[in-house]
Image 1 (cartoon, rainbow, N blue to C red):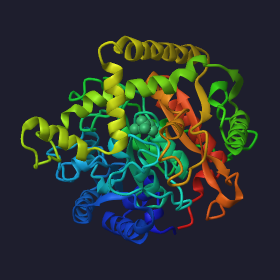
Image 2: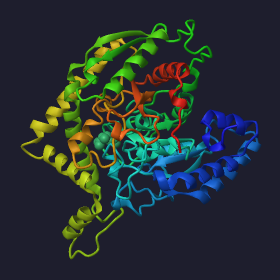
Image 3: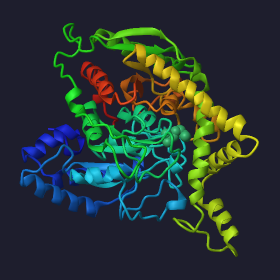
Image 4: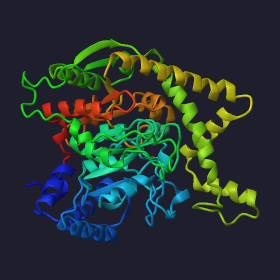
Length: 508
Ligand code: GLN
């Protein structure tokens, strides 16, 4: 048998249900794994060992009384932007370094309702702004496939942790790609749900018209289980919608024959391949892996249209970098040294307190976003930037609406490149921003998308070749119409059963 920490949710659930293992054993195993690898990966900001073991004991009691839900007793890690009562929630920022929320986010309440075990909180780019986790105020996280590379971001800690088996699954947040891009860089499954599908109550706000919480898991069935647990209407988040939550697992069609000719389990589905996502500057191996993966979807019965076009895609990055900073500049105004977290005490009056608090509390990328956003919203520039971006946002959304009249899903790469080197893009914000060029349009349109493992590339330059010799993971993004997460999971599961990419683990 695998080591306990290597199990998936559904495997662990079976063993717990049959009482072959206990939650305490499983939790100890994950904690031991964290202790073993954390000094190489640096995925976690806070480990809550004692409370995790208490939760595991509690879960075991429930299980022995016959009360078990899919996530009962299973250890998880949570991105440090999601509020956890009594557990420090830093947002990767000095500003909230010692902030202990007095309440739980709704997603945490939902995990707790199932008696999940929370192991701690994961590292991230400060306030979720970044694509590499290097903008954490504390330390960078390393990619387990090659320790000299980034795990992606901003949920880099969550993705690296699950890839290294520090937790059975994790939660992240995605404003422009922050669940999918790190999932892609670490060979994990990452789902950005439809805007409104999952409550954001207790998610520290970055850009409120774009933010969603999503799962990072080792396989597609696990992703379905976590989605079923966290989705749904929440009276405390007026942007969550009152639609019923499907049992996502029911939509996964088992196909033990894998890619056999009879296994055409995607028969009847139409998939478009938008040309604009195969951008200039994309690595050849990413392009090649995607082509092979799409042919696999075709073999599985899907009808592929290689000539799909979403022409406004080229404006998405510009639109994102006006809207997201604008919203961030408003959301981050609350950090004034009075109400939350860090406060610079050496100032002589209230204005100076606010100025110094923000000067020392925020890192440089956060300040850059606040300045960009404040500029775009200021009198005289509002119409030229913010309002214009909103109009183009509508165009982008309409193009997706049109495409989904024809297609059940769209398929693109998750990122134009594999994981890059630590330090490679940190001095060049524009290069960093380009890492999300394929994921941001999805948040702009509010539609759901999943990233799944779709192959490996050796770095084009031999001198930079991955230390493990295994090459670096490549992610495939599947995009769906609003509230069609079950279709995305169905396609993803069909592909997963026909390939072995998701089974590969980093050599740690
Ligand atoms: N990398 C993008 C940014 O820096 C997206 C981040 C996110 O999704 N939170 O804004």
